[in-house]
Length: 394
Image (cartoon, rainbow, N blue to C red; front, side, top):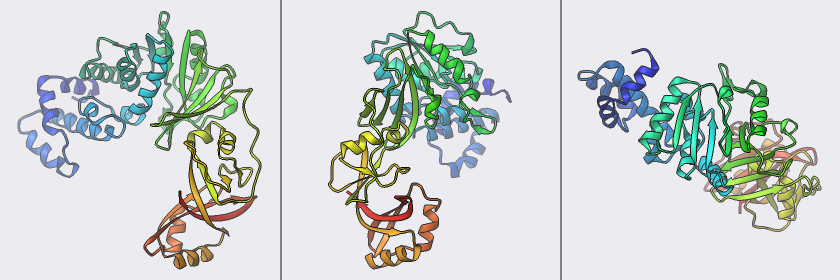
């Protein structure tokens, strides 16, 4: 059973499903013993497929609710590339709030976004050209009781007629044979095709890599960056239900959002001496180039024109940045830092860097923190000079 599609189909049989139930939660350290035992009663290929699926379900629990991950099916690429459930749910909520009744989900993968759309009550055409991926997406719709709302089609998305759907959602493949693809025209399908498809639709959303250069963002799209618990997860271009040229950052799970249109975007903040407080903007805010809006929110300025750290003399509550109280400012000097940390009896050291080539682990090894107290060190630049800022989270 070397055909992956046949191996997957075997998992959907009564024997395969029973085997999946039996191997659920198998400890990797016990996998060989479990496999040896099960192969006495089941085909070796089926046992291997079931154990492989169990491993994938365990990995998927980091992205999906545990109760969903235990029922869903995955491929290795599907686990890695699927949208985190919290992000997909947020997007489906946006579609629903904008009146979506139906969506063509192009490059649907294993169906993470399609599931979220369907759970929001939206009818979905989910399309993927890979036979195994499409089969997995179909099995997931069945497993979660959403088959009535999700039609899975194995097809080349460039040949699919999306006429009649309220929305088009495109999530191009951004990985090739050598790993992550950075050139948007090397996406599968290319960004240019996805943009033209989005423009022809009544409304559309196009998922892109968060690191896309701003100059490559179409002028008629609104660009959004989404983070989940501080980690930037994706960027999306919105067409037909957005302000052209606008940028926004959305922070999950709080749904805090900062947004600027071409008419309201602020100039770069002024550079100031380091004050009592340092604000580290959320990564989505930085990617969206909305640090100026955060600086205004906390009545602060930048510590350096090229560094996205905001400083202020007073503490302001903001959902868009993490605040630290700065106790010391040193020119970059490992010996001086080591002496300071020893004097303060700092044993738990968090190292953050922005604008520095020094690796945090390398610095930790050199200063050898010891003691009952904790501190945060920022390796950065202040007015162009390599600097160490020492402080603690507020």
